[in-house]
Image (cartoon, rainbow, N blue to C red; front, side, top):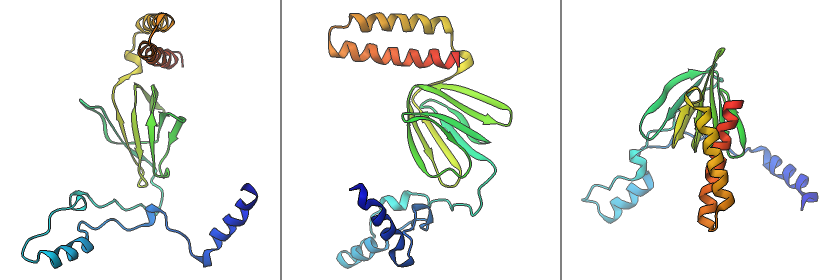
Length: 201
């Protein structure tokens, strides 16, 4: 299979000189699905067509021709907005695949977050938050939306409570008898270990 990979790659790249477009190359979606409206008018010409999801979506913002110098960040929790439309140099998010740095012009990506440190870099100033979980949506227009279930600035975490919680959950994990007890204790150990690493790093 791998022996033929280079041949297939060359064939795909050749493709008669045509390049397959990236999603960022495609035009913004129209606000109305013309094919649906046309089909509707054939079936029920006297009734206005119903709204489709496209009618409620904003068109995709255009991808800038040059890479902006700043990254626009939105960081929200279920109960408040931590950062709204702030221009920064970089953010580093704790993705499940590892720490991921996001700079202006980053390729469009969706990343799941794990318990860890989210750092926002603005010049020489670095603001760190501990996030429990969530998602980061990195758009092609140098806008990043970060949605977390829970977050707290690292400087507001009490190290003694973290150590106590880690000891308690480690003891619960060692004495757990059912799969549910083991899973709950393991989550507690993972979160408190990540909190401990955030404080020491």
